[in-house]
Image 1 (cartoon, helix red, strand yellow):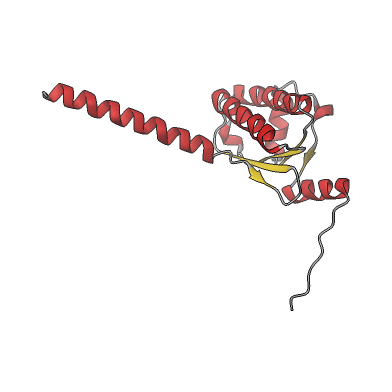
Image 2: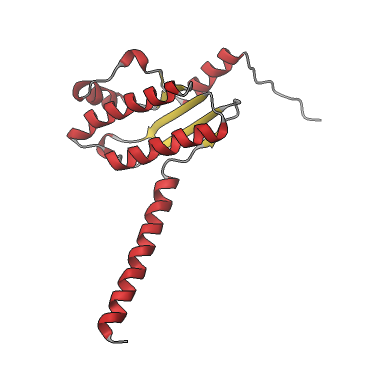
Length: 162
């Protein structure tokens, strides 16, 4: 095998490895976590959101909801910063949130959003065409969980340790 063939083969192996690692990073950057509240998932979003990446996340959420018979999805934007979006990204994110909310609603799943920073909200409203009447948002994950607990008639009780 000559030097060019060796380099070509090595390049192919490295390209495949990079693809595998990118796939792992995509999966880890939007994990689907089961909540303590029955039939509820939490999806924390981290890092930059491109159109491709949000579509991947949306597909993952929709598939995860079907596989687990979910009634409520809490999408957490706490890990998303203002810098993670460019000027076009705010309008795109607004549209994607509307699309995700609509898709989940068609599946009978209530969507709750948490963790929007004031700057992110302001920019999305300025640049986007969000249908705010369909968005159910809470400042924290805890407040969203409390809302669902009240809705389902659940309470946490502290057990005495024996």
